[in-house]
Image (cartoon, rainbow, N blue to C red; front, side, top):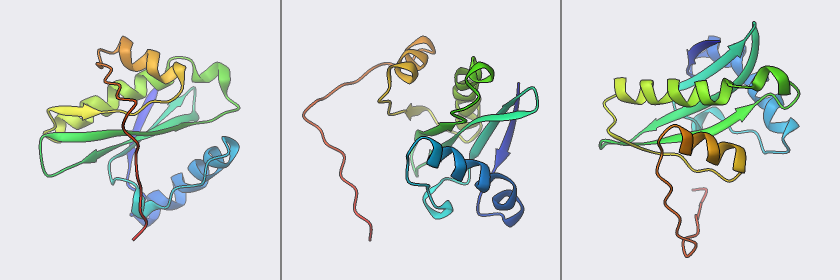
Length: 136
């Protein structure tokens, strides 16, 4: 497996990575994210020369970072094995390089929850909390 850093705000990275990411989001029936909503700290993992999954480290002005918005190639089920876990480890390494001490990774599907728990992430569940977004 190979990991590559990318920043969609750089034109050459946008041209190389955004068409891949956009396809993956659409394949999973997600609305494609725009580069201005994504961190400049993106990682993409490939396996046997095929791009498989990507995620981001969103650094704050504290020792805390959000690690998430993971996406993968829906069609490459066999090559995907081990890649998401590898991506999570690499995102954590990047977070440490960026000075982060604590990360938060939201997870909805059971697959990702199991991977996070296997890698030592502690589960915090509060069903009384809703996430609110506002486009401003």
